[in-house]
Length: 112
Image 1: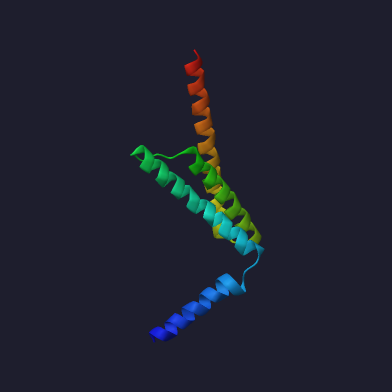
Image 2: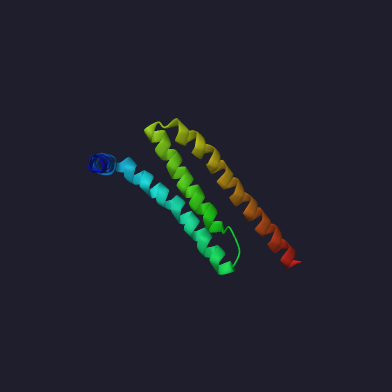
């Protein structure tokens, strides 16, 4: 039974990642890599600071991965991905806007 399960799982992985490999699968994998990179950037920044921090690069990786995943969802007609990433992308953009606004306000205070 375990051998049968292992073979079925190997067949599944082959079907999903090899037999069906096309542009959209590659695009979706790159989008997922961007999402993974955001957590690596956040982790490394936090380790260096000795406390939990969320660097600006986290939000850029989030936005890049989110937009790419949204495009992937639209191309593949996946409503769950479309709904999830549409809202998430708006949140990522808003966070970047707030950070830029805060930094601009901070530099004006430093100039005076």
